[in-house]
Length: 305
View 1 (tube, one colour):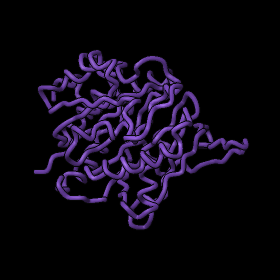
View 2: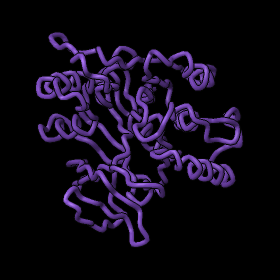
View 3: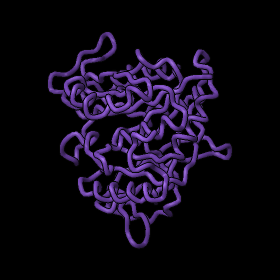
View 4: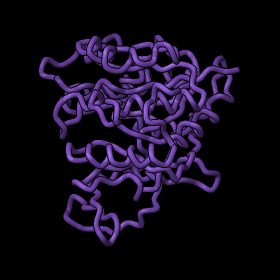
């Protein structure tokens, strides 16, 4: 049977939320969002989990999260380093910001040799999302260059915060169910009338709420690393001196789709996505997980796996 890996992007820290939110407990026994993600991945059929982290907090991370799973699934680590650039590039002295999610995936190229799903460490994606993406990826032979990827899409209404505006990638999907483009809307607020996007010019646009959005849950085969290396080099040629620029996964995927280098199947889930965009979101995430435990979706303790 083909192997499938879960790649967890945990090197970043939220700009609007103090501290290492990836290590913040949300479950009744101190479980973090990552604990639930790995739990869902294991029961969906994933064989390995790779955490992309910053090396300076690796011991804290391993103690708080990684060591919980070493007897249940293969666990490895990759380290995202701001100085890890292609030959010929040197980091600007003033640069302190990481290079983004696309660069984080590249950090794992040495430990991932099979089909893999990418998630944000601080996002709760739900059981159905892991089942769908694992069933999709397990079909592929790791040694073949597929250029067929996937992403899990959520209805916009299932991804909003009660505590402020959010940025969401609205997906354009063709008749074959494949992604055509992702348009980033940067200030969507939840209202009684429905989601409203506040544009930069101050115009308010009422959205339907059924729009499919990307929450950074992607499925790739290993050939993606070659494409990301090439696109990251191009990105640096154009943005090296821009101290806040980042190499994002949607940008890379959009580029591959536009060039017809790859296609991306959209796997739609009706499940709810939970995230801690604002510190106040933590309470609602805890309440949502409690409801899922009461409904039988999750056990009271994840050690029951």
